[in-house]
Length: 65
Image: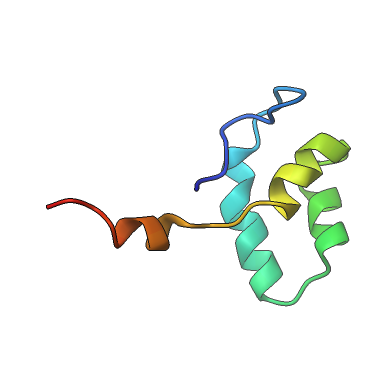
């Protein structure tokens, strides 16, 4: 639901890069260039960003009151 704090495979901290990645992707920048600029060179870290689906809004609908 939310991006993990660290990469599951190598342990590199990645969560602080998520907002920057989303903003640059919305502006239409090429994904490969964004990941390279952010320093995500390992395939395991890139997979965390490319495979992530933000479901926070969907899960919030089912919150118990």
